[in-house]
Length: 343
Ligand SMILES: *[C@@H]1O[C@H](CO)[C@@H](O)[C@H](O)[C@H]1NC(C)=O
Ligand SMILES: *[C@@H]1O[C@H](CO)[C@@H](O)[C@H](O)[C@H]1NC(C)=O
Ligand SMILES: *[C@@H]1O[C@H](CO)[C@@H](O)[C@H](O)[C@H]1NC(C)=O
Image (tube, rainbow, N blue to C red; front, side, top):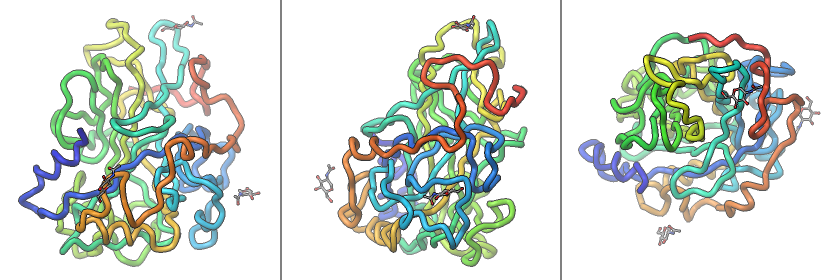
């Protein structure tokens, strides 16, 4: 079962035909200390990211000059015209016994075929009269803030899986912080981006102020503020962290848990997502226009080109920042970049 049928009924009063959305898998492209949005050109960037999408991902991707659909030769996402890049911080287990780290891999979301990476959504909840304006070439944005110490559950949240799941993403059963109990089937991290745009700027100095939430965070409503009047697709990431094997009950409880984000955040409020638009031509606009008709839903959209799970999993990129960020199962003595863990 896919949650969007549930959420669609929850939002039924709002707009009956706004229930279709894109929901698709993007396999791991690479894991490295690169960040073309916040620290362009910097090698290495301050912390490790797990990155998916077009293989033109690079340390520098200048807006308006660097064209992902032209430069990419493959994408790790289901929709083969989507050369966007999507990335978040990586998650590590920090051993409470000896302080060493192991990188936590991601697993495939319900019904999807993928190798690591994440699930990407494009949702219509701020669409007025079913109309959304797709992003323009060069568009990018960030949700969340690695420096924050505040709970921002409406848009950055975690779900403890295997304990009776919740309802809509980032609802009251989810937590802003990493769950402080053992989660038998893993932890799902959700990053919800704003759904309203100022209609002018492809980016802004903080990578945020050109976009806005329609409801102070979380899933949108058709009420974009006057400052940001244009309804854009609401992008959301789900990352399925495979934490189930870390079973020792002594590691959890009383506010404690053993996981830490790559920038040293042992609470989880600072989880964040970066988005860099890269759909070919007007393919995303066509898909958004087709949502109300039902021709386009989840990973099945007749106006878009789809590639097999096997083909999307083949699209990989070698690290440009070559270092050990924690290969599968291996232990590393410190977080790449040496971030201190704070709680
Ligand atoms: C990525 O950037 C490097 C220089 O930093 C450049 O040599 C390379 O061609 C770029 N890759 C692509 C696909 O443009
Ligand atoms: C560190 O502790 C973890 C368990 O928390 C264990 O699996 C690992 O082998 C230990 N490493 C060393 C070097 O003792
Ligand atoms: C895709 O959607 C069409 C309707 O638009 C439906 O007939 C078809 O069964 C769907 N395919 C999959 C794999 O869900």
